[in-house]
Image (cartoon, rainbow, N blue to C red):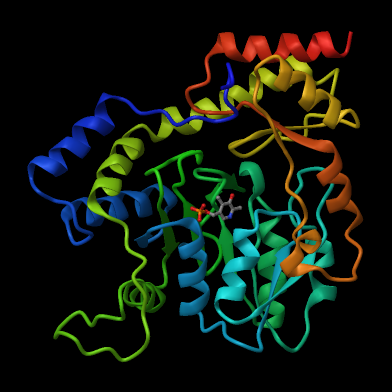
Amino acid sequence: MFRIPVCSPSTTKREKELVNQALEENCISSTSKYVRVFEKEFARKIGTSHAIAVNSGTSALFVALKALGIKEGDEVIVPTFTMIATPNAVVQCGAKPVFVDSRKDNCNINEELIEEAITPKTKAIIPVHLYGQPCEMDKIMEIAKDYGLYVVEDCAEAHGAKYKGETVGSIGDAGCFSFYANKIITTGEGGAITTSNQVLAKEMEQLRQFYFPKAGHYWHKKVGWNLRMGSLQAAYGLGQLERWDELVGNRIANAEYYTASLKNLVETPMEVGVQWMYVIRTPDRDKLMDYLEMEGVETRSGFTPCNKQPPYKDNKEYPIADELARTTMCLPSGSSLTLGEKDIVINLIRKFYE
Ligand SMILES: *Cc1c(COP(=O)(O)O)cnc(C)c1O
């Protein structure tokens, strides 16, 4: 057990009240007002006309890609430095992920390298707003327009992040969110897709549940899946949405506090957005992680680039992703992290560098 976990959820009386209310009303399936209200409220937060709740962030990516018609023989551009769910969703559609190296400053996909990865088979780009830092969306949307590609934003780590005044998840064709327990807004397990394209929204709604038609029964025009969110998850999530400013604000406050105290010791690249996880960069990464672990502080290394993982091995070089994988680590970053806990982490890092 760690004295300070890297990320733990924040459950208050309000989430418990709402879950209990759903139970009292015997609302447990996915066809309840809790899911509908959750979708409506979430769409409002992101600034889209629709949100479709699903059972995970991975399902959100899969449903969005599937609804956009991504299929076998297609290629989808993704950063190699990301969580494995991003390319996995592409594979789930039968298509091939094509990796692009990262920017050193904020760990996101290097938009300058996207064009050279485009082939006649390319159908979409998935920019991942890693750790809550928004990608260079102007450039990415411009490339997508020039080449006729879809843009599916992976916003799993970026609830509430803004790019030039627009909330991420409202910029591309679709935005995909995760509500896994360690994410900024959580339902335990869960996800959602945001879009303002009504045709796309309808297709996604049907794909998530057996391609049931709105009217009529047991007539299925296409293959659909069961990727629904349940009422208890949605009820919990409604409590989280009421606490949006607090939960997003806590992540930003963590980052500001860490940056002010650590910027002279390590590189502190997470300066904008919402800082899902607070990342530092240092050549002493492994030693620092071991030291903090011994002191009871849980940390995480940066991602292992997808092109280094057995299912995705390729022969290309991604030097920045390799460097990020060697030098980045996440400090404790949960929404319920206390000031005292942050001070413990900071003082230990100071001691390490003494
Ligand atoms: C967490 C995460 C996902 C997957 O979300 P799940 O809800 O765990 O399926 C996808 N992409 C990124 C970048 C993530 O961090």
